[in-house]
Length: 489
Image 1: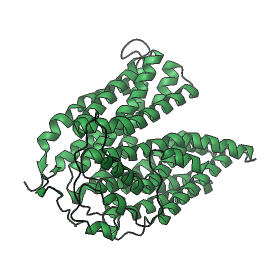
Image 2: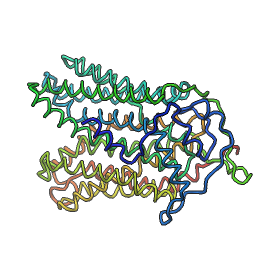
Image 3: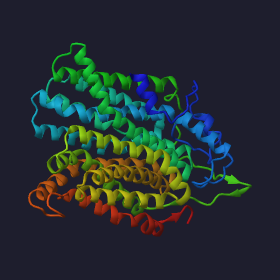
Image 4: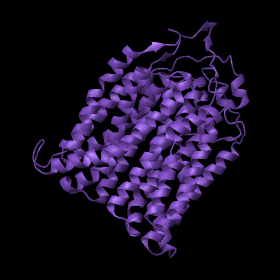
């Protein structure tokens, strides 16, 4: 089961050659000179005069052989990183589907369940920026290995827990090490210059994130059935076995990373400078950067996306069951379809949109799609249209989330890029703390008496988030250009 799941999760990547020097092949074709403090090998720090490639072709044009080969090499380079991200996010999916029933089966109350979930988010708020900043000093790859090792330890603690307090402590530990995504984003943007190709690489990374969360519940369900068939009796015992299996998967990913030499990287100083790439002997134009206000604006957009994601997980099931009469089957199918839409958006639509229009316009398109579909989800109850809006909301989230990460990297000075990505992850974790309470209160208010739309629609939380996303669509197009600076100005 494990090999097939991992193969499916990374079907978009080519097979990885066995080599210790992870980064060298892709970086031999890189657009910019790597500093690099990501998966840095000594060879990376010496590559100071790499040629640049032509600008990414438009959506209508076929990629050149050089571009295709470069993308293939980049996939090979980042495959172990994607694997680690996939496995940790698979654990998140397992936790979403397994932890609530596990806690209730050992005598925890619903309030204690909420406290455990909040504890994870609070720990992630603290842990993500610290680990990303640590990756500036000891290397991205080393911190990725630390994160997956922490995930394995947290799952083992959860499996061995006998009461609520032990589970709570284990989930706090999991939250502290839940930083694979921002660290991997930093590693990706280290390897690829800011622009369409960087966003395309970030889209593939985000596809691994979405796929891990999507496969997690199905994996947990299949594992529970297998354990029951093997004679493991009781829901608590089966949940413990699932968390132990999840820990084993994390250890396998850790072993693969070590076998590929992820930890054998020389640290690169955060103060290292990046040489300017040249083409035909002419220096490239200075990259755009922004100050603290630019990053604040981008974090606000990240908060909206985090709220939307949390709203779907924490509130939609209640709304759909009480106002649409949906059961677990219908809700599960909608979640799976929305995840498929997100995967397609990241792997197919995103590269074409960014290649044709750039990150800012693509981000605005994503926000408009997210806002329109989130609002419609709360108002339109006719089954085919409601389902379509819910599914397309997933595509809007994918486009927006990935382009926000790309814009954060683009508008960050080199020394602050990883820290800014980590802070964005913390902001989304903060949304997971606030959104369930606020959305639940709005849902209770709306369900109480025909506040919005026709009788029975009453999707106040979705209208609020959708309206915020729709209004925010102007930000990438209007606010960011006004805040833009250039290095050296």
